[in-house]
Image 1 (tube, one colour):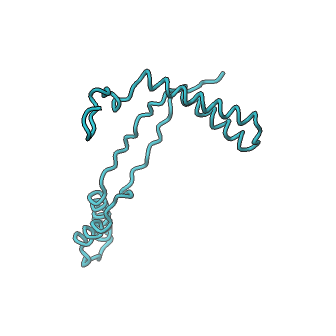
Image 2 (spheres, one colour):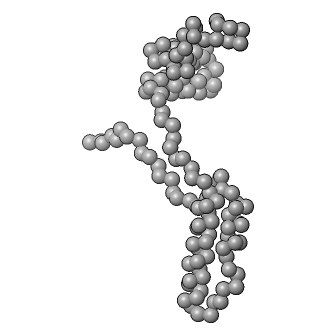
Image 3 (cartoon, one colour):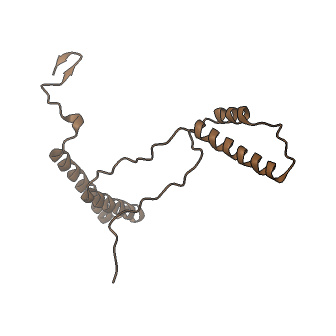
Length: 145
């Protein structure tokens, strides 16, 4: 007996203090401005307090110098039948590139044409909001079309 999960697992990104947009000059300036180099480290407790303060300074500077990233990805609105056709086309192309036979080329062309037709049909039934203007409403620099 097999159990099939139909949901896609969402991979959690581990938390980080920096990313590609971190302003390292700002980070260095914040660390230099808040660090006290003349800390007396006479006892074990003084060392632990200094380590805790330094760790806090580094984390605080990283949070300030790093802008938050939006982890929201765009939703995938491609219908499953189109995805399946794309997979078939990719497999057919791979086969044609390996064999270069007329039959494999014919299968590849058929798969490509099926995708084109499916996309054309999809655009007819679900028009894009960008193309909602009618030709009467469209104007150019030379006047109405």
